Length: 88
Image (tube, rainbow, N blue to C red; front, top):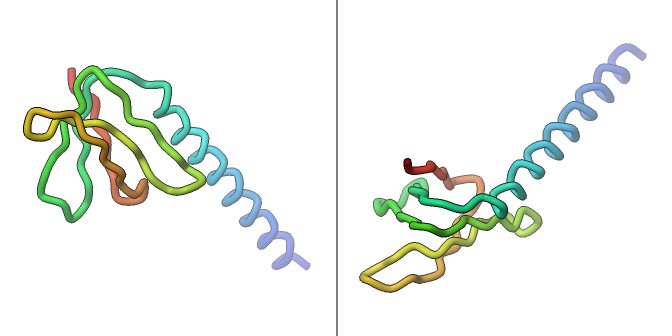
């Protein structure tokens, strides 16, 4: 019985963490400014200037528009391997 209670407690903690994680991802759609976006395994660092990084947590990716070769282009990257750093 104790094992079942511990298992249920552990599962509820994981579900709670997932909801917090999902909520923090959706907050990215509200942030605007300058960002460096790093994608694991990708050598290029994308610079988003005066823009935003939008998350689509139910599909598992970010969408952002960095300037590449003088043009703003749409880039999608998986949430799990993307790091976003705000630039001052």
